Amino acid sequence: MNKNFEKKLIVLTGPTAVGKTDLSIKLAQKVNGEIISADSIQVYKHLNIGSAKITKEEMNGVRHHLIDVLDPKESFNIATFKSMADEAIADIYSRGKLPIITGGTGFYIQSVLYDVDFTENFDDGYRAKLEDLAKNKGGDYLHEMLREIDPASAEAIHANNVKRVIRALEFNHQTGQLISEHNATESAKNSPYNFAYFVLNLDRNTLYYRINKRVDIMLEQGLVDEVRYLRDELKLTKDMVSMQGLGYKEILQYLDGEISLEEAVYILKRDTRHFAKRQLTWFKREKDVIWVDKDILDTDNSQLEFIMNELKARNII
RNA sequence: AUCAGUAUGGUGAAAGGGAAGACACGCUAGAUUAUAAAUCUGGUAUCCGCUAGGAUGUGCAGGUUCGAAUCCUGCUACUGUUG
Image (tube, rainbow, N blue to C red; front, side, top):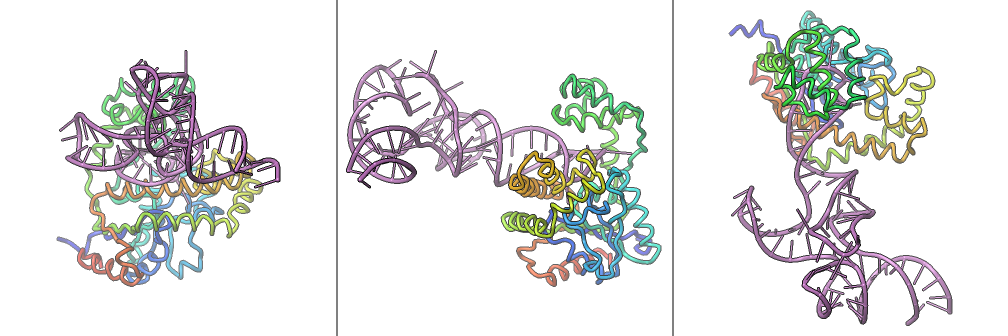
């Protein structure tokens, strides 16, 4: 095979608070890589503490992409991510370096890894109409609409999952295609990359402990002040995509007097634990994943050594 | 010591004498192709088989009743009261 022409790619991910950032820097230095962040919140400027964003110092000279590139008033989604990430990868290759995707958004990682196609979207008001219908007639009504045009999707998507029902209807309305067919085509794709997909993992109790502790640290670092600044100075509101992030929506509710700080912290910790679980579920389903068990490989060096061996075995380095 | 109240899963709790544990939290498993840090779904008293199903179970011991978490008696523990 033409190994020289292969596009090589490393993915280093894992659930939130597992310790990805630190290891990704060390790995990048070892393999002459640059980092692409697959993170839906760290893309935003000014969202620093709550997103556990890497600092300039921590980067230690390693070049990062897709961090601090969007204004928090802009919305972000997978299609935007995909095109920005593709661009970054081309840029990294052009400088003869190795791209490393880090960050906890499995969906984003998948889109790049398997070159999933996102047909250009346009707003023709149809979505707003559907949202209105959902509000007035309920989710079951929309689900029935979907059943009529795309029974397979209706079967796969629960009627209560209004967001996905709406997307399926919108997709059909805009493209004339069925989203169930689109999904089938896209999920059958092979990756254009020679990649190694590492997932860091930890014993569940330890992970949850680290999550709780990290929230406490964020509060000490001034999370409440950060959110207050975003609300009062930058005029961000809860309906913006950036403010849907963990740590932002809860503290915003506290600042708006809807809940106490104690409740906000409790909910934030709880929902972050749930989020970590969903991430793990995603990674378990992903094929070709290499698990890095931090309970066994319990030092940075042993993890790096393991990763380097896998990379060599795959002819990536 | 006294009088009163309370006692049900891991937690908060439901349950007119008629299928105990609704609902919620927690825990756990999963879905996911344009908000994905989003959105949504399933399981969860105990024990045995680990699927079908069976047995046990509302602090403990009795009683009344066709039938008791529920009514009665005694005991134990906890909370409050008086001393």
